[in-house]
Image (cartoon, rainbow, N blue to C red):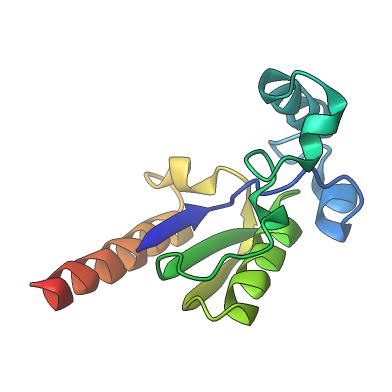
Length: 134
């Protein structure tokens, strides 16, 4: 199983979540651009599926996937689009959007109940997978 938590799977600057939530809510547009520059040697690399895995044409055969997104995260829409593409290609996918949360919310598990609940849920899914494989 693969677990992707608020994944960056493309260079997305036009989705609703990127437009609405990339200012003032922890992860900013400027930070996203900075992260992109750390990976890219030239702008055309944005189209390389190794940078934007959502661009891989064939995703069949990938491990069952759990994708966790946060309601107020600029990366939310691309994570959910990736979940949809995986499902369309027959990859078993569980997608969970955690309401009221921002990017990075799991880091605040000590003070945010939704973060603790989400971590417990991820652990339960992984634990179920390992018991099933035994």
